[in-house]
Image: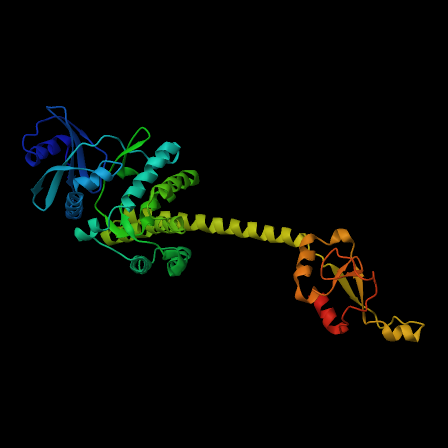
Length: 419
């Protein structure tokens, strides 16, 4: 049963001694997990109340409380944003309600953020960099999860196997994710501290500033791509690139080149995780919604792949229309039917003729290659003249005969021509 703001105000007075609420209003939150309210007390201060609706949500709040206590004042002072501060808590049965000091700012939709100014994109990128540069001892000392790059990839493979057992994932998506997860090079990254549940609802914005970051229930050491998945899911390339640019400038560690690719994969895979959660809960409406989103994703990817294949085919066709590059000389086999009236001349005539091409047909790249080739170091043929190994240097004679050319049997030459 959902609690009203006034009921939450009454609970808050038990959590924070001396608190005297004078006004209460509902606050945006995850409605499936929490009842929330904003309070105004007799001194004009504001507070936020979060009351879990089930034991799992209560455990998340208790985990966040432990994490927030791990952030010493010195660490908080280094951050470019504020963090929640727990003012009090009260336990009712198996559930614990928490009261927080109010934080300025308001959440914005992903559509609003994706069309934001570069100044706000810089704030978001800087906030992400600050989280990822937190000392890893903060996580280790709090006994929170920590994963190496390979351990993180293996966990995703296990989650993929679990999702496949539902029988509700389109086969094309299963193949796509499996191939990506088996690409070891894609998963070479430096693990760092990650928020783990970052999205638009956990950012408080005031103007072009990020005033606070909330939702610290999943802090861990892992893949920084986790905190970029929600950005990539916006499908606004300008916004994502702007945030990434400022993030890269602010970070002490250089981000890996596969960060956004893994982020895109994790954004897609989040739908499979949602499906698994819905199936496990026996929630038919959520299951149907997840299946629909997965089918739409599969259709979109198939359409993109088909378009990419068409563009590649068109590019190949355009390249083939240009034809192969012409060689510096053309070699033509002499027909056996060609005879000569002079026997002496016939005896010395080579079985091939070398026909020089027009100078305009010989490009610099071809001449450079010929000049650098060891086989051509003793002879460079230009417009039918024989020159020394140094281009442009005068030769002893402008001999235009073919005596210096090596005689090659017709069959191999014909094969080379055919190739």
